[in-house]
Image 1 (cartoon, rainbow, N blue to C red):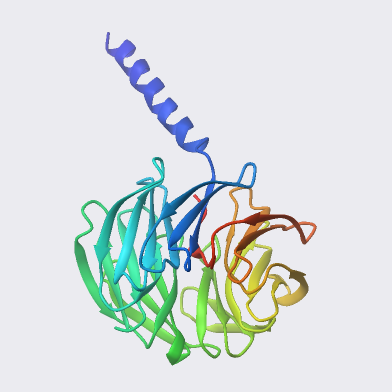
Image 2 (image 1 turned 180 degrees about the vertical axis):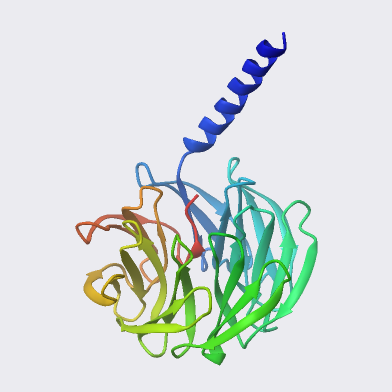
Length: 317
């Protein structure tokens, strides 16, 4: 009897695990002017739904553990919670000031919100969305990233030209390092070894040691780099250049730009699909998403979304 029950329990667990593995991959694209989020089925690269989100939505954080998506709303003084399965708004959380960057931790238990005006990062638990702590960082915090071991939170302080490293055990700043002019989007590699900062005003990318924030290199990009994403086993870094309407491709071994790919007008948010091969780029002025093949370095699809597509953050479930 015990063996039978164990086998049944094992079968149920396997089914649940399998369901998680085969969950449909979706991209959640914030459309700031439309006050909406376009949901893109990335298996067929089509918009399947538009979700109304007020407050001029900008940032996106996907929490696969809870099947939730968090949308920062700078004019809504907080963030909106979307049920990723039902594709519907289920909560609105007040933060204050103007929330911009947003990211979930690795285990899905906390969400971090950068407040552009208040120069803070607010930490919320993701069960009831109670505030855990507010951390003062540098001026105009924007992009954030969490290390794959869930130990560090990195925050780009745009007006201070710096990156803050927060210890996620103590929720205190461990280190702050100067980078290029006006850092915005941050990307950490899958091993937690390198951190990349897109520096808007100096037209370059700072490469840092992700543990001690030691500056390793500076790589020139296009005009006004905004955000970045890694692909092909972290071998290539793709960086959106707002004013050039291009995406720079940086070889992460040589730390040199090897190509620039033309996309839509004013590209901003960028994320990598689960296949580690396709790159999705939100184009603000075109209100589209460009899909790039990371191997051929060509745009293979352009998807019409809502007006003012930004999708700042990790927007693919």
